[in-house]
Image 1 (spheres, helix red, strand yellow):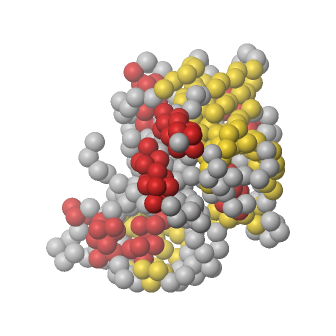
Image 2 (cartoon, one colour):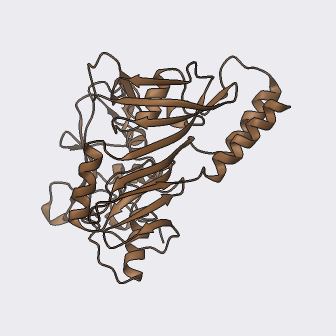
Image 3 (tube, helix red, strand yellow):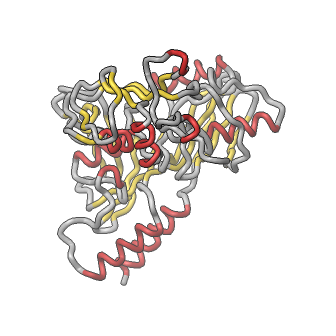
Length: 355
């Protein structure tokens, strides 16, 4: 499918003078994005700010949108070199309506491990976005599900029902999707009441001290890096979060842990383990994509580069999923084996330490 992201203005929407009068209602502009800049935001060029905010956008097309006068700050069009400030109100205006509620069926392979009239359980591959959104209007899990339902003559309104929970793009593993409004409500209540059985596998930097432990601390937006979540132990910001962990295997410089979430906050495992000094292995957003500090051996650094090549994403996998079925009221339980990239990384670590 051709690129059709809506974070920017395509050239066909520019007028002859490469500008748009935002006050002319006849132009038919629609607001596609509205952001209030956080009070802790440092000065940053708006094209870079929007690029960081929506990483799948094209920097060049964001600049085009700015030149067209379609990026508005506090009611006034700005150029791409404008520096955002705390409290700025940013809008992106385009000539076509938002596609937030448009789901395009696409023939994308997905691993379905269970399906009935009420729900479907998928073992998601790493690298697949779960739901369409800015910069990811297609090639998502929801697009694949829409095609699957269409092909099998099933009706499922994925705008109103569907995702009960989500996992990050680069996180692999199990997800349950509801097919009916009743199933969605029934399953969502179990997640809210923490009655589901979910375990995650993660590789984290360093040798975790205790064989078992609990990390407690509110999860909220990082005060300086707005792309990260941060752990606030004093509870001054964010939402209460608790992560229980157990060490499964130690690799001297890396540890394989099993995580049980008592709460389900955004980036909870990633933020909590960074807080205790054990960032997820190869987690670029949380600075886990560099070799562990204090080890300067050339052989070690070369080895880490090879493992990064094998496992080119943060090492997190949704290993188990258990819940009560909305109709039968019987418990369903699923386990997802370790994905190939993580399994290959484990094998390489074991060989490295043996030799």
